[in-house]
Image (cartoon, rainbow, N blue to C red; front, side, top):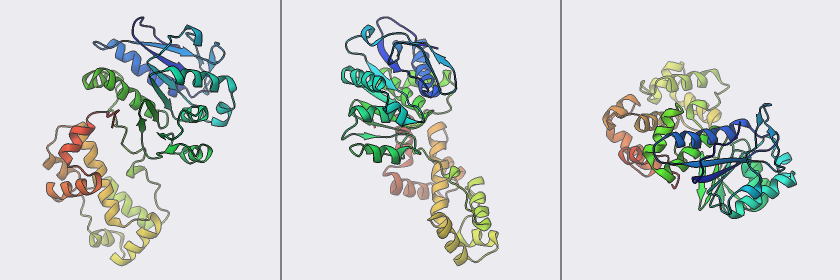
Length: 328
């Protein structure tokens, strides 16, 4: 496994090192390679390592190195810094940090995937900048590098020429956004189709899903959560939810707050918003059809909640987030 050269194209440098997470490398590499198969863009992808030797990933697969630092152009177009789960080992690797620092200083666009943000932060490149990483590591990034303004809930974050992404597959989302930035939305969508990516998620989208919220330990609350997430269009007034659980409305409200930190009504709104966002971003249904399928009583009710939550209408949201929004 190595880079794909297209002489004359924009040089993309991907750093590889022992115990790097394979998908952090392979995800962006596949996106740039697929873009080369699409009409127009050309990327010259080079894989480098600190010592110039091939590296072995965390899953045992060997990555072939294409070039040394000296063989790269004076000013590469894009740098991709992947990560390894044990980020302390990565930041303690003087050769790796030195390589990334040298490349970051001379590359026009600098990016990281997952724990690669720790290596970038260790070079000082992220001081005073907004950045993200895998949600499990966000608190550690903020603690270890207090000069970095960590955004723990975003898929990827852009601050000028620096773009950092969340865990593993978010590197694909970020790379698609970079392709869109370089060559337009049509090319990015063609790459997404080639890679059978269901939807190019915008950077401003949360790393988290309401449906992936850890279920409550209380059986009655868990039952209500399951009913809501299974079909957000079911009758979900407080009285109806409480009756389904066999308890009083007041008791359900107290239990739900105690177990989840929110009211049943707020949880219903969150599930319906998530369903509506997916329908708006990936389909051609009208706003009225989306409102019905997502469980809102009317298009106007959905518009009000969108405006209050996101500051935009459903129509504007659809237009904005059908794009990967690298520059958002």
